[in-house]
View 1: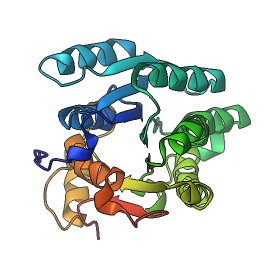
View 2: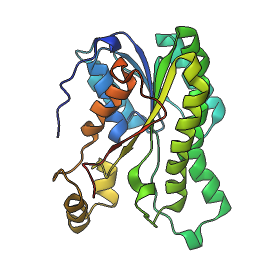
View 3: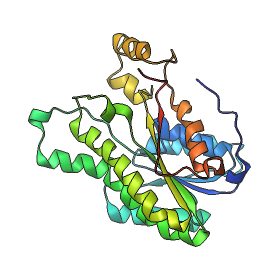
View 4: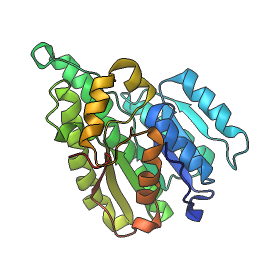
Length: 256
C-alpha cells in the first residue's frame, strides 16, 4: 500500500462529491479527500459499509463526510442526491464519478434487459451526475470532474462485454464533456485503473495464479491497492493539472 502524503491546500473546505464512495476504490477516494480537509459528500447504494465508513472518518476530521444513500440507476435519485449535497456543502467544485459494477457475464447468454441495466449502472450515471452538478459548478466559477474508466476495455477481456463497452464509453463521454464544459472553466478527465485489489475483487475473482500473471505484466511488481488511485485523482482534481482536460490517465503499474 502506498500512503498518500501529498497535500493540496486548495481542497480545504472545498465541496467534493463522489459516487460509489462507500466501498472499494470509492472508499479510498472518500478517505483521501476527507484527509485533505474537504467537505465530502458520497453517494452509494451499499448502506451498511457506507455508514461505517462515514462514522470512522468523522473522528478527527475537519469535516465529517456526508453519506447519501441513492440508487444511481434512478435519474430522479441522482438529482435529489446532488441537491442534498449542495444543501449541506454548497455547489460541488469537484465531482468524482467512480460508481460501477463489474459483473462477469457471457455474451451468448446476454439479454437486452441485462445490457440496458448494465449501462444504467456503469455509463448513464456518469453523464447525468455531471449534468446535475454542472450548473452549480458554472455558478461557482468552474470545477473539475474525474471519471473512472478501466483498462479492462483495452485488454480484449471477453468475460464482461457490456461492462467494457460502458468503460470505453466513459472515455468518449469524458472528451465530450470536456469540450462542452471547458468554456465554463470545468475540466473533465478520466482515470483508468488496472486490476485493483478491492475486497470485492479478492472475494469473487482473484486467484493466486491470475494475480501473479497480472503482476508479471506490470513494470511495478506489486499488487495495486485502492489507495493507489487517490494520488492520481487528487492530481487531476487539483490546479496542479490546470491545463489538462479530455485526457485519460492510466494507473495500472505499467502493464506490458
